[in-house]
Amino acid sequence: MKERGLLIVLSGPSGVGKGTVRKAIFSQNDTDFQYSISMTTRKPREGEVDGVDYFFKSKEEFEQLIKEERLLEWAEFVGNYYGTPIDYVEKTLSEGRDVFLEIEVQGALQVRKAFPEGLFIFLMPPSLSELKNRIVTRGTETQDIINNRMKVAKEEIEMMDAYDYVVENDHVDLACGRIRAIVTAEHCRRDRIALRYKKMLEVE
Ligand SMILES: Nc1nc2c(ncn2[C@@H]2O[C@H](COP(=O)(O)OP(=O)(O)O)[C@@H](O)[C@H]2O)c(=O)[nH]1
Ligand SMILES: Nc1ncnc2c1ncn2[C@@H]1O[C@H](COP(=O)(O)OP(=O)(O)O)[C@@H](O)[C@H]1O
Image (cartoon, rainbow, N blue to C red; front, side, top):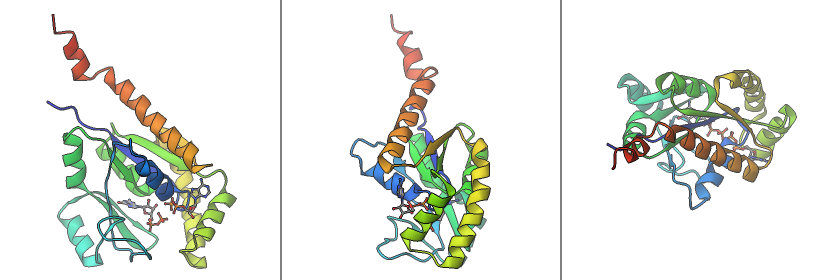
């Protein structure tokens, strides 16, 4: 039987650079994690493509998915729903492939309950002023939303104890390197109990 893949969860406050770091990780050719595309009721931003960046859903469609228990986790974040389709995650892990989720903090805490064996990484800004700077320079949000996101960000940073690792996103390349190193180390740690190595001993 194939061993299950590793569920990797990258979370952290809005604007810290989760999307940027995730895209940088997946742009590297030797990345062999599978990205789980989320569902959202948020309107697409310019350049975003349905089925690539998100599966864009109406509020009614999303509520139906919740009712049918087709989401591993979901959260309402600054006025929109976001959620992870459960079928893709289960299928991919059972094929022995690693799944990578990039989600906000409430959702990550739900996943921790469902998958305590997952690898939970909190992406940390170098400072709160740098976090605000990143949200402002991205230019996708109004002043009201920025203030709201900063308030939520402080509450989210308080939740970092629930994670296995904290990675500072000072420079995108450095943050990616740290995440890849953590995943590699986690695989090596789990290899201690891996069936394929135990089986080696059975061969005369
Ligand atoms: N709980 C949960 N959060 C998600 C999911 N997909 C994306 N998010 C998070 O929702 C938040 C808002 O995402 P988005 O509107 O794309 O804005 P941005 O990430 O700040 O550019 C971010 O913190 C995302 O990481 C999901 O499936 N579940
Ligand atoms: N290490 C970094 N240094 C400087 N700017 C960054 C860094 N990482 C991300 N950014 C910028 O910060 C803004 C927010 O990043 P984004 O990936 O959208 O955050 P999140 O997905 O966590 O909300 C973007 O304008 C992005 O280019």
